[in-house]
Image (cartoon, rainbow, N blue to C red):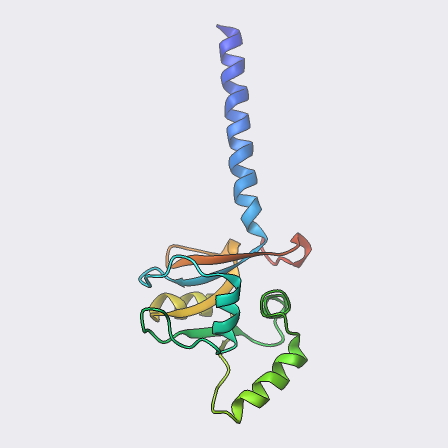
Length: 155
């Protein structure tokens, strides 16, 4: 009986450890998000890149994409731009200067991750990004971009 109790405690410990590791695996990810009422469940890195560079402005369902960025000075935007868009701040500045003359505007810029969550949750086909630790029930993750833990601002 005592042995059964010990095994039970060990099993609970292993399960709790596994759950903790699973949640921590996403703690240092950038989550690309849409509102829960948007009928998109997954996007590829290439699709997201095209949407944020305004090369793809309409979804397959015919809805207009509305990408939103954080401010250029924010570290999360720098990581997102470097890793997913594969352009640094200066390359993006040059890119948008060229696009402007073709009548194409860059994504909207919002002040904080909370602002991104609010905007994306209320705007159909809006697409934004936040650290995974800031996710809540208002949004759905369509892509995860892993970042180093020292880059994270999560508590």
